[in-house]
Image (cartoon, rainbow, N blue to C red; front, side, top):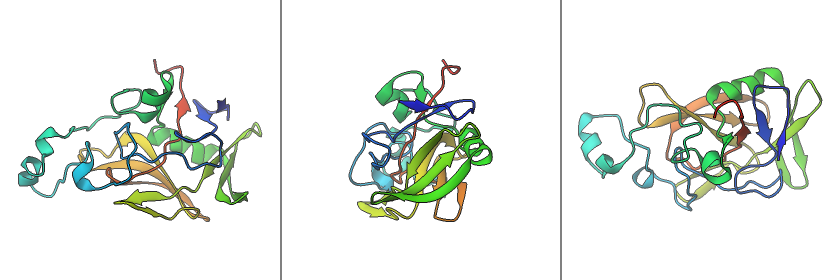
Amino acid sequence: DYVDLGLRVKWATCNIGAEVPTEHGDFFAWGETITKSHFCKNNCETYIEENTILKLFCNNNSLKKKITTDIKGDPTFDVATSHWGKPWRMPSKEKFEELISHCKWEWIIIGKTYGYRITAANNNHIFLPAAGAFVDNNLCFSNSRCSYWSSTPKRNSLSNSYFLSTGSDKYEIYSWSRYIGRSIRAVYDDNLF
């Protein structure tokens, strides 16, 4: 299901892999469509170290996918399109910016789950649970931070992509390592296809 927040896309009611809005759902490395329990540089299909040219040829990097463009709607890399079909897709960096600038964000707890209730001008709302993120096999910041991948890679980068990061007092968009396991909140975009 989706919620119409009066924005250019409609937002899913729950995370990929969740049954209800308060469930954390599954975690994914950026550009991967299969969840896993261990998230590291070596097992990420889309992460390539950028420090030196030599590293492009080490650690099986020649087998990795060198992605420099937005993956929205591409079922090979977009978790939402892969799992739920078209016209579902991952939100771009710009769609997260629209969500931040056009909606009211309120840090709340539902049952035992902390997160943000995001309310639009039309009074419709979604809930983003603070699921945290996986580094290696450790879940960090569960119930204290939201961490959601966008479909947008950092420009000219083979290692970083943009994500929504929140705590109880702020919400911002950063770019960071693609191998980190983060939540996915899909958007319904019937204008994309």
